[in-house]
Image (cartoon, rainbow, N blue to C red; front, top):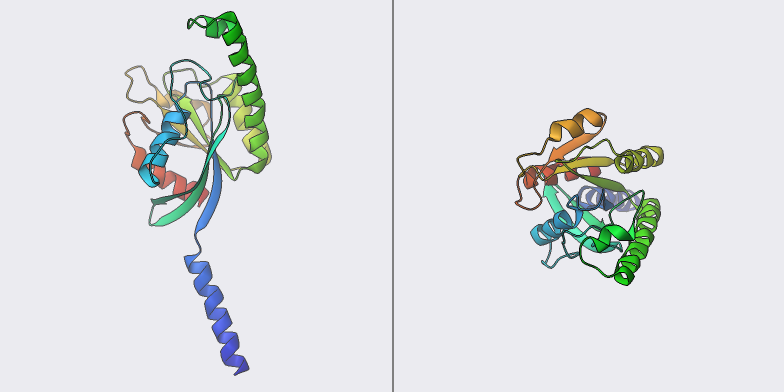
Length: 212
């Protein structure tokens, strides 16, 4: 009986390993207006009960607090991974309240938003201690070799966290994902349009492969 019970235990452990759902906590990082929240909303819409993680706006730093959605199961490459998705505030080395006044805000409102945005950047950096990997979203129409992108990638490499670069906005004629790949050839990259959903299935496959 002891041998049979031992075999049953081993078989049960093997079955649990086979069917255990992989889980990872993934943060969406990148500069302001790169499309992080648009992408987060699309992932949630495609793989959960709907809703959204945040509001999208042309005004920088619309997302000023990290927002988390748990238990989003993504299937790709014949496997599945359960994600806790964290949409983080846009990373910036400098936040000037005058930037918000250019969008018609009062000085008081602009200073309030600048303060909240600064606090959001600090919060985003702290979240790195609690993540299993990062999607670094870049605007493919912009110069990728910025202090923000270099700093985020440097942090990921120093922490040994898996990193997948997402070259967004390929629906725009001036986009150039090749510039991003040339700037950071050491990291995997997927090109998408979060707004239109272009190549989104390729992204899901890459997420399963890189974070599973």
